[in-house]
Amino acid sequence: MSSSAEVGEFAEQMAATLASAGFPRMAARVMMALMVTESGRLTAEELMERLGVSAAAVSGAVRFLQSLTIIRRLTIPGTRRHQYELPDHPWYDAANSQGPLYTQLIGLSERGLTAMPEGSNVAHRTSEMVDYFRFLRERMPQLGEEWRASRENG
Image (cartoon, rainbow, N blue to C red; front, side):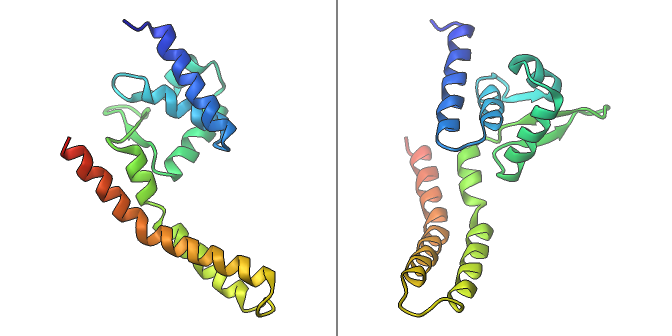
């Protein structure tokens, strides 16, 4: 049987691993605090208490996570307070929401290519980046649907 201390340690280790891979540390801690809460919901005050951090730290972290659609903000009925929650499939939702970003990166890169010397290393690297983002934009929805189907089948 697991203890709440072990679950808390798991959450902190996961957050540290995400942070070491470049994910903002406080956003990772907030995300994992929500992940290991049975309801998947916490108020800003509860996050501050659980993580021992300031309101500003929580505010910045939830803003970042909302921008990636990893969490969403809910108003507590009858109050001006909010809860933050993980959607049912946060990783799926976050991955599938990046299409517009890929489109923007592709457009910027294509415009940048027009200023680069044809056949140069700079143009080659930029062209490869365009191809990669096109591939991601095309394949991420398909991968998400494959993942969702695998969850339904087993």
